[in-house]
Length: 140
Image 1 (cartoon, rainbow, N blue to C red):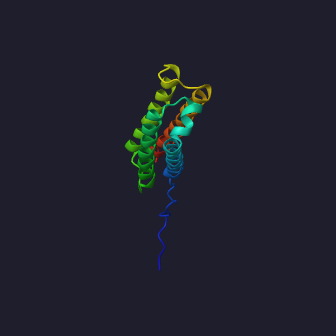
Image 2 (cartoon, rainbow, N blue to C red):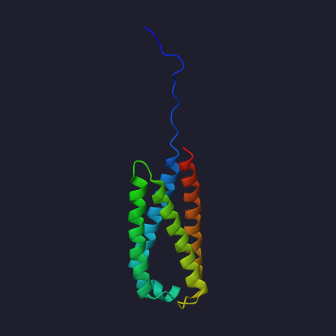
Image 3 (tube, rainbow, N blue to C red):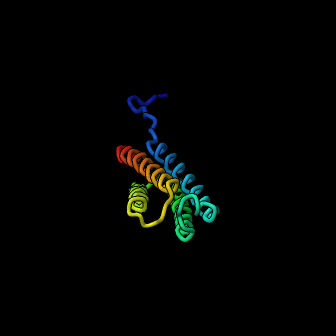
């Protein structure tokens, strides 16, 4: 009986797992936010200054985004181009939220401004974390 020499294989490190986790967290938090925007559109309208006509499309878009994030995160091998699209979407969302605050398009209350600024920060953090994950994904 002979044993092969020099053929030991190192276990492959799955660099996609941290990225998969952040995509899932992004997806779940987006879904929760979308449900809140839909279910509480009317009650939040006063405190935020966000008209219901804006909350409903935001909520629907959030739910669509959550589904897309879940599909990407569930893919056996996460496609880099899909992650790049997610990063671009989060960056665009951040810019859009900031524009809504500073362009004074909607009569937001102080709480509404804080709400939008926190939302912009959250999507910027997700974009940053997903960018790091994408770089690691490309390094494998």
